[in-house]
Figure (tube, rainbow, N blue to C red):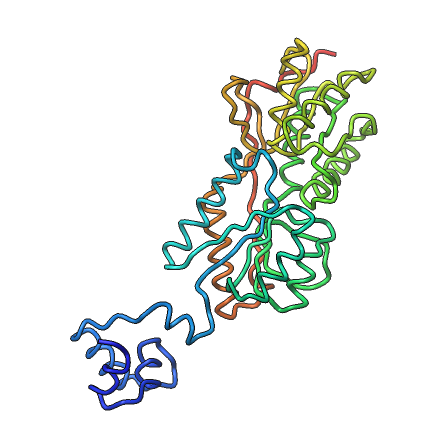
Length: 336
């Protein structure tokens, strides 16, 4: 039985029956009870496509993502996406991840909004000055940012606390006697890299230490660039006694460079990496700044986007979770 037949059987308009089935407040409780009872009796099930057309929704959420070569093998990225998938499936929705080239990323946002393919978007790898977020806000299109950006307006975001994570790393190294601490960063136009570097400089200054500019390298966001950055640090004189790597993608390259150079990791040079380093070729228990519950984080972003679509103001949808430091074998006492 379809909606029209159900309405005829009840002697009501299709609009009234539809509104009763979908819980509209203007339908009185007695009418709603009659409609729901009749629908249950005849086994009526609403057509999800018809319903989505009626309410102007696609029931699809999206993510436009400029994939890097390592992303498909990145356990952190995949954990977040798996969590998002869990949440959309539970809500009987769908998730579209659209890979694009970096130069086509912004036009792809415009196309996605105009085509009404999705009800809302998750914006990943936020930048310090993010044109994507500015564009979405100007269009009034629903989104949740995975990370923050510098913009003077309320928007929904989910992030981990960069200050706390770097503070944990620096404090741990200081407690082991290290003072010549280096920082290897992702490109500094990425908001997380910018925030983590600012936190690093603040922590060093609070400890009364001057961070050596030669020991602060950026542009490291994969194994190759991490490997090359570590080689640059090894060429410094004096070289650092400890290194903080602000992302796990380049952390593998950093550890590999030290191993290839015959450096005793945790003895001659200590290493802390932000994010889980899972690589069987390394075989080391790496000290990490861990972002707990990544799968749950992905699900939470979907829940926040659903709340935004339901009318929750964006300023009520801003969450920062706390990282933790997991000690491993790659940090030891400074021997100098």
